[in-house]
Image 1 (cartoon, one colour):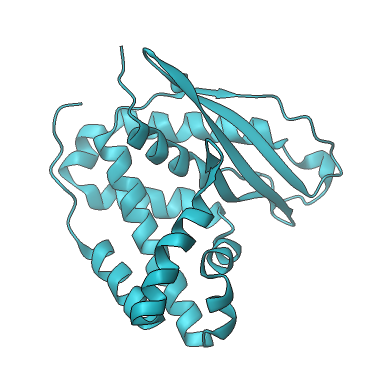
Image 2 (spheres, rainbow, N blue to C red):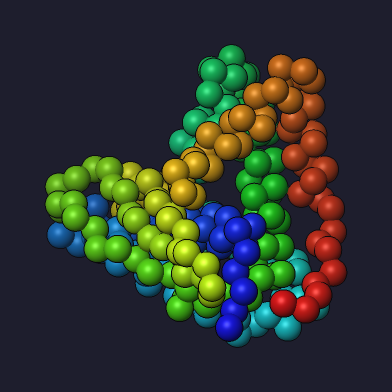
Amino acid sequence: MMRVTRLGVCILALSLCLPVMAQAANSSAAAMPPPDQVVKQTAQEILTEVSSNRVEYARDPAKLYAMVGKVLLPHFDFDYASRLVLGLYWRSATPAQRKAFENAFYHFLVNSYANGLLHGNYSARNLKVEPWRGSASDTRAMVQTQVLRANAPPVQVDYAMVRTPEGWKAFDVSIEGVSYVLNYRNQFVPEIQQKGLDALIARLQADAAKPPAKTGGS
């Protein structure tokens, strides 16, 4: 049976978080797919894409990066997530710093998620989506899912979503109660305090530019 480690769960959860969006441009409540349906359908599409082209992506990871950037992140409320991650430092940052951070963080996440997908061996069968109990008039939603693991308890993964004119967009994911936005904030704030925001941006740019590790057996 497939072995899914806790690190693998984090990579899978974050990669699934990004495309958790409505796929209809119509902003009326009736036209929007409910959040739980969007999670399930999009996750299946992405995991099928990765599984079907794993050999090609392993040979040329740049193609996987392109897929992640094109399909996933454009549907994520990245501006809002960046504001939440930087917290008070977003307010004090200059417009140029904000733009530079968003760009650096974007590429950092693209490469991190892409490499995680490349090294993992995930299937849509690992994901169980709980029915959403909200109403069509809600502007916020929490989609609860479980990542199923062989010989281990399932891991709870919750997606925080907001309704926008373009549809539902994800802005945070919590793994067993731990928010990814809060996790990155806790990592970045001490670095900003010690070295400054510009140094953090430069570090993220350098990390994103690193070549992917060679894939091994999974």
